Every structure is written in C-alpha cells, then in structure tokens.
Length: 40
Image (cartoon, rainbow, N blue to C red; front, side, top):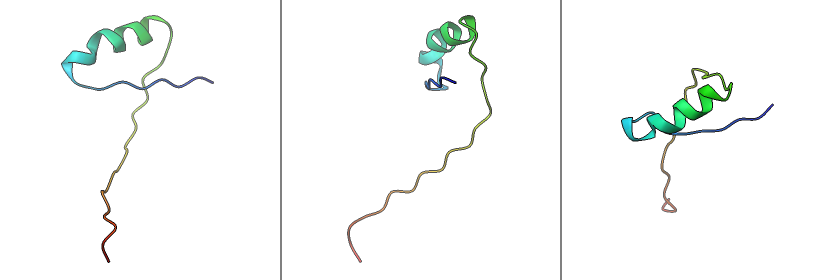
C-alpha cells in the first residue's frame, strides 16, 4: 500500500485530482495536533 498526502485547500486541488486520477482513494481521516512547549 502506498499513501500520499496533500492539503484540502483550493490550491492543492490539482494534486488531489492527480492522485485520484492515478487510482488513489481518498480516505476520511482525522488528525489532531497539539503544540507543546519545553516549559514545565
């Protein structure tokens, strides 16, 4: 299996079209990020 990632904004639409046109399937994914600092 191969995975590629790109943004969901309008500027990345050509990349999404390329991937989908090459047979990649878009999966719904939730990613969560939290910035942490070195301070305690």
